[in-house]
Image (tube, rainbow, N blue to C red; front, top):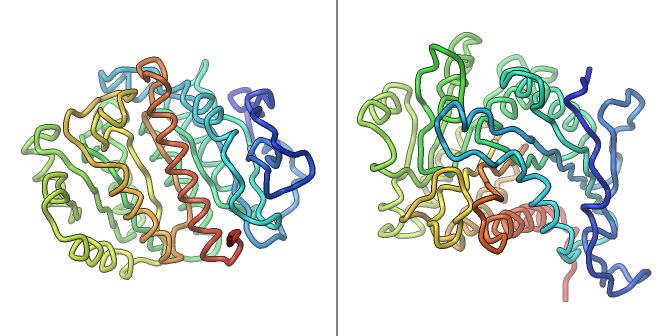
Length: 339
């Protein structure tokens, strides 16, 4: 099932401060992380109350094809280093696994995406919640296919709503193959071929980052979107109502974050920096609200580029977003620590 382009994680990346070796309340993630090898055929389905599984997508070929600033292939390693020192604000019934990385050496973008799809499907089959670390935003195409293949095992017509926090629609045509700017057009075509409902909401869109043709494409495909400028001036509850209406019409939600949705003041290390963009506090509120729907089946964050990331600012932001995702799901399942 898995090729040479899959590798288990280097455990040395999961190192950090140790305040106690036996008091779980003083533990950090690096002290409780567990490791799995997806290439093994005898992995047991997770039987606990809540388990997460991290998988890296060490690929930015789509960014290079899209003529962006490459470097996101190194993000999984950088983000893991930030995650390692996070405190455990959940009880010992919660488990976090690291399943290693999908690599992009000596293979095509399409092959990397197909391998990621297999990995995501297997993680879901193990009853674990996937947290995918991009990589370029081309991660979304492989990630979505993994979710779809998993749900096809259970449902004849899966209804998957995609919520993408992004300055760009990523709806470009792809006559010569996919890139980091085509994924949601590719997914629309898959839905059309399989006679599935295409449900896509893009949050944080910038007019200066998308052509008129892309806005027309979004309209023709029935894409729902919220402009970045409208988020800054809108009443918070009216935005929540839009999210609620979208989520209520879906059976499952896949959330993906392109780091360029944030202002470069908060996310300088991205493939396409934005002088204007969303405030992380705003996105955190939205994320927590969406996850409380109990419909979110998977999550990823893309386009952190460590070589442009001053003081690991953007990797640190990715860490905080993942921390919020994990803790929100723990709260929903009554597995959080209460002081």
